Image: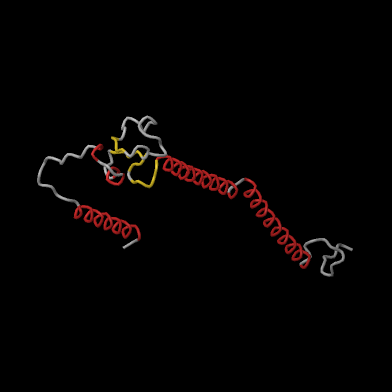
Length: 176
């Protein structure tokens, strides 16, 4: 089995296992009518209030109110961001916004740096300067081999007297 098929099989196995765990932990209700949730005003502690996702706990006046769904963040009239709690009691909206902004900014900057590095590295490797240097080196090697061949051929011509050379002992005699 090749790596691709093995990867697909293992992914499928993980999906089946996760689905089994989620389905086995789910509670099956025989009644078709959902149980109504308590009103947010009925909660008197931060822990009980923040367990309901529709509720918002305000530390200023220790009250549990309905989360203002028409706004992304609760307006100051409902509760100050530094005093608002949703989901858990130990994280306020102000800290959450700052943490998410820092995390998001870090991720965006990291992606931008990676993209710039990849673009710059690819540009340097396949740039025209490198290609020109490689071709110039190749031309020089070819020229050197041709010069060496020419010298060898000239030596052979001299040996057999095919090149007029008066100093060479095997040169042809001219009509004397």
